Image (tube, rainbow, N blue to C red; front, side):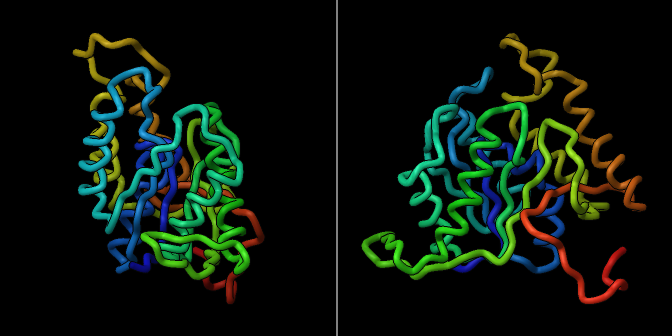
Length: 238
């Protein structure tokens, strides 16, 4: 199956938080999108890996993605090495996306920066024909995505561009709160963490509104790039 876009996240819920609105918009425009989670988020303060599996499936249904896979890497301890790169390469060659979305290049959680560099490096290596991979006993052809973009996470980094997600913000929040074990719940007896506060949940809305304000739209999501953006003409800019 070829997908137009594949979004990678170090943990289940990274993609929803960082680029859920963009995914919803791209699907509405006819693009096919998949999500690949690197870990099951088993080190999360609340919940369990099994609960996160169920929540991820529910969120994927809300977003309407074509596929969601989990590579079952070790939460907190995966590294950017050959073995992990090859697992990402297999997914890139399996789905042959034109665009890859991945974690922030610098963030509070160490897995986010690690996931960012791991996926970015694998995107390049996936285009090298002399790196051989097999999936289900079949030799895979080389494939390199045309574009790699990094979504924003905990830190308010300066984006290189924003995507207008006006009309999709409400559904994005529904996909996020599908992770009921992870975010604000006044009735929970589990330990608190930086993402379980009411302020964090509310910040998701005011960040996208602020990015939208700065771009002249209602809601937006920000991304950073690895190379210069190019447009055919000045009229392509909003």
